[in-house]
Picture (tube, rainbow, N blue to C red):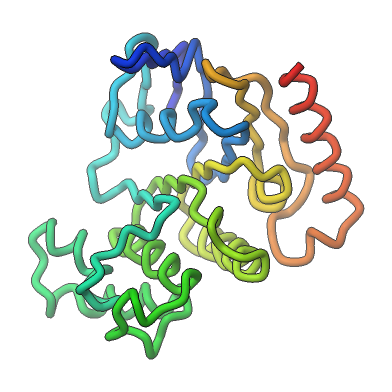
Length: 245
């Protein structure tokens, strides 16, 4: 899908976020970008989304051009919902921006809210929803355009462990059903090991791609109980420790 070659990004403040970062994304993959806070994970995600441009290097799409805006879904660490709007209205927003009427969009809105487990909460406003439910609305909003590429920037970081585990399992089910490519930013080794087919380790700032670890696991519920999961967590931890020295 995408080849990232020698990308660098330095902000006007003088902060060098990325240096010579290279990565290959395959269609249908689930990639976790793993590294310490401030290592450029979110910057790389923004470059992939087209929300920023690199100072050096290149991003080359196999199709010859970036995906259309509706073909990329973006989920932020905060749910970033319109506080005055209902769940339905928040999910409708990207379709409205594409010129669809509410009546045209309603079947898609209802379907995606059902997919993320929010049937019955269509008219609830953010203040009436728990943190996990607000994040489900945010994910539904990103999925309603049926994106080819889903970018997620630490979406579960602020949630309690029980809610996080449930949403991780739900996300894997959605990924398998939809067949999209997912790039997931996290600083949790346990989360990366549970979710990703490929864990990409990034160095402290300026961020580089230090190593890629292929997961031997089949992503899905129950893998946390397998010895292979514990071994994968240990392997990632050792690799990260080696890069942080």
